Length: 238
Image (cartoon, rainbow, N blue to C red; front, side):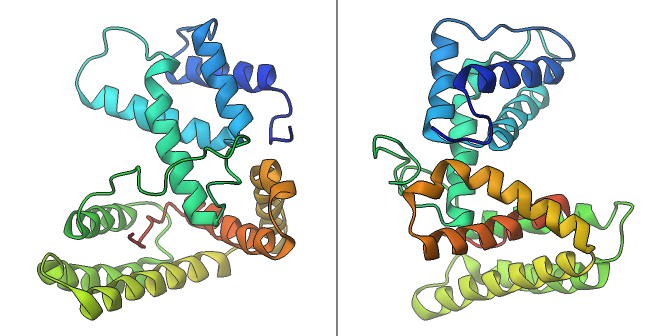
């Protein structure tokens, strides 16, 4: 097995250390069934940073419910880790068969992504929050995208057929424009570091994919990392 963390035991150790930090120093050991569960993430090829984002999502939701009473255990993070992995896999174009050593993968239709109007509302909220940050370089483009999405949201619920397909294609184009603007602000050294990170994330799947498919996934993975660093939301909707 080849992953961005080579051995399942080391993968578990890093997940344990990360979960400890998210629990503000409270150590929750990953042993027994929990160890087997996290080893399964490693065997499936879930990149360690993808696992971290799933843990982040679980912990953030737990905190949103009110004062904590006990630390978050890794067992509770499984659904979020798999959801984030599925989102990552779709974003970079890794097929489900390549995302599982036994061919099981994540079912293409197993995730519920909500309605298109709700998706647009979430995207607008995240883009609006970006305008309150320290980096304001993308503000003019973000403002233009927000206005367009806000106008589209009003009638999105009733869109069907070609009209819906046109809006979905427009979302893809807007996502590419935001990503290209974010990329244009990066220097060569940063882009090289991002490419190295993409190679690490895709390492578990390189031997399972044709060369042309891998190249497409690598390019998409680089784009995803750039968007993630710029805190840009995913605009495309399936």
